[in-house]
Length: 70
Image (cartoon, rainbow, N blue to C red; front, side):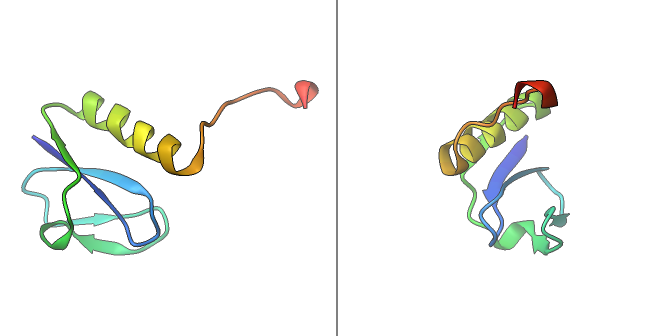
């Protein structure tokens, strides 16, 4: 089971159930037990998709392109 939650910076993160701490890319160490759980998923692939959806919802859709198309 994987837990999905947000950091104080707003980024969505997932961690395996039973994990004590998770480090966000902003540098903050989070105690998983103290976070409000947004969702639970069965596997890491579904958790990653859900995190991506939450990030796109908050910050807009991301896309990749090559430098010559900019």
